[in-house]
Image 1 (cartoon, rainbow, N blue to C red):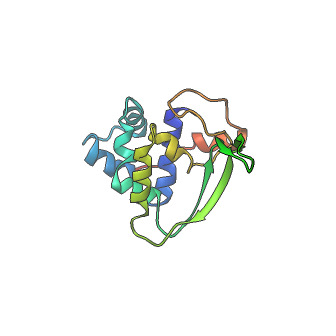
Image 2: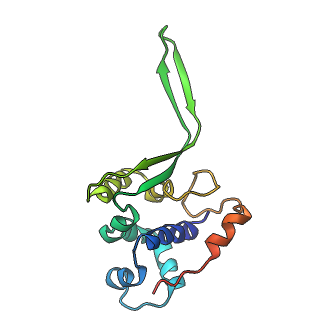
Image 3: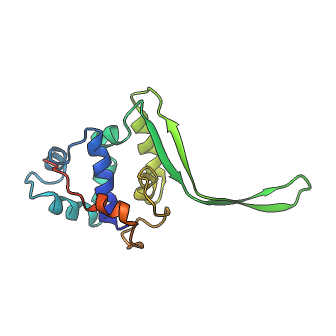
Length: 161
């Protein structure tokens, strides 16, 4: 999945939660709206998408309070000592996790803090966008073509105005 496709998927999820890109974009990035394609071009170049990801308005819609979330935890490998004091390597497979968000009004603040700790914030937020691809590099490099059932969703245009 390219960076552009990931940003579009993130925006689609936020849109279903009530986030409107056009007013935010005009207020934060550029006062003139030239269309969704231009906005995506602007956000995907460099680190301009940081303005979106760390925006309180966006985060409060993306991580809406009181709803169930589903996210992908990546594979993880770590070392530990067994009962006999021998060092063993534990390998955990990637898995999907579902939790209910608390009723706190500040759930999105927690996620902004966690996202700021990651080297690449898109990797953090990508875990909350479920697809059939493994969690991997979200730096803009192309990944294998997604299955046919998800290809149509990525190409679907939404009226962002």
